[in-house]
Amino acid sequence: MIRWIAAILGYTFFRFPGAILGFLIGTLLDSTLSRSNTKGGGYERMFRTESAGDRVSPADFELNLLSLASLVIKADGTVNQRELDYVRQYFVQAYGRERANATFRVFNEVIKKRQVSAQHICALLRNRMRYESRLQVLHFLFSIANADGTVSTPEVNMIQQIAGFLQVQGRDFESIKAMFFKNPDSAYKILEVAPEASNNEIKAAYRTMVKKYHPDKLQHMDEAYQKGAQEKFQKVQEAYEQLQAERGF
Image (cartoon, rainbow, N blue to C red):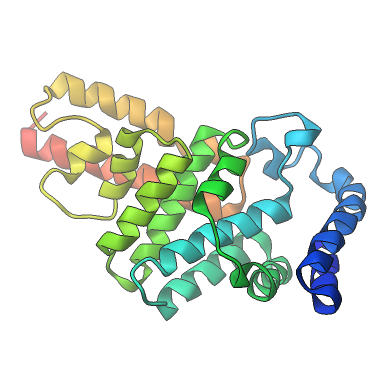
């Protein structure tokens, strides 16, 4: 929190160079104060590195996640209020109102005025985040796009680009994407099998997907992320039950 306050103050008085300097100074103070609070907490378990030099702070992650959300919201050339409301509600639920407001404030006053690079953000996160956490980021981004009732083609393209930068496997991207579209083959895509797969192959795929998307995988994350994990898991269950009914096994 201190780093962002210092960044805002630095930007106010000395513009961009001041923001950078304030951020660096605030980081030193913030890390000292927050180390005892974050050590062993859920946030750090979301990341797979133990190296202090590679660690992504909670404030950094929240701001980068908000930046990715902004790219999806603006992908179709319009800023939809329902999508904005979804993001704000999600952040409040995940991080608390005060912390969420601070993140939005810094984004609006500093980051929003710069060109947001999905490639740069994902390069920062992809080698530090656990794979299941990266999958949850994609589910969050699709949920934003779907907040107005329709996931547009430009939004899908943007999320697919982000998935590529995060090095998410194509089959996993298509599985999550299929959770937001009702097509004849959606159930197959969610389970990551071909329509011509045998019943035994579908059963095996279902067991694999249950392991991959089980909510217990994200117990280390905040409540909002766990809710997203439960939604993904429910979609897997529904897809399997649909195929069971269609095929009679």
